Image 1 (cartoon, rainbow, N blue to C red):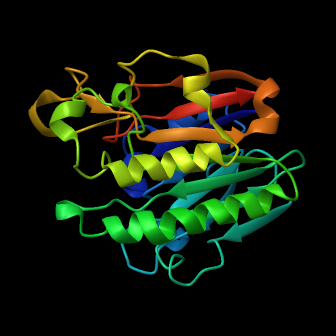
Image 2: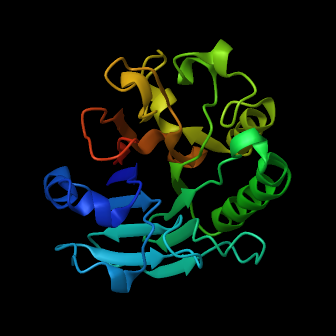
Image 3: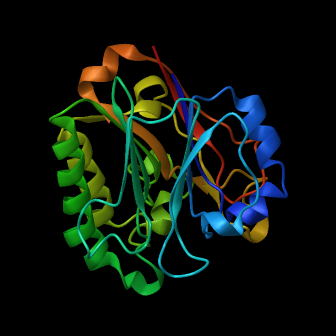
Length: 250
């Protein structure tokens, strides 16, 4: 099974930048899309060949997740069952025969770290608890924009960005705790080197110079480790300030 994740920074915008063509050529079984900024009735595209499951934010034009799958999910769940966290459309779970796929768009800590406390002390533990609850039934694959560069090799300029949103000690520790609870970072499972990123600022030609951050992940339950056959990033796919990332499981 091939699973892709992509923060498209606006679904309606990306549909005009080749998203349909990318989807058709991707050969993906499941595509998890974040920051869709739209409701289903605002999008006329039918995503031919895929079942579409939506979790749009209550606030118009903001956040939201969409999961596209070739097979119809056995079940679909929007949110994590916690009203504090579920109004922004950030988590969408689809169940398949072998595992759950959790599409996630983790909150950004924001300018001046205004949401850092919420992000680290409330969101992170609640999301981790949700994943571990699912895992009691079957393995879990989570994928999406985690809004954190976990290690120094996950961004081009770690020293200059230490303490900024996405690279604070609290955010990094939260991701460490998620992995330590029984999950694997698929890309780091196959690629130990730096220089591989999934997000670049629109400023100063950052993408062309590859001054980026790896903040988009496919993670999975440790029991699936032997089934991982490939993990990858697609930096040449344009249309968003993020690029797709993915993994293939046998």
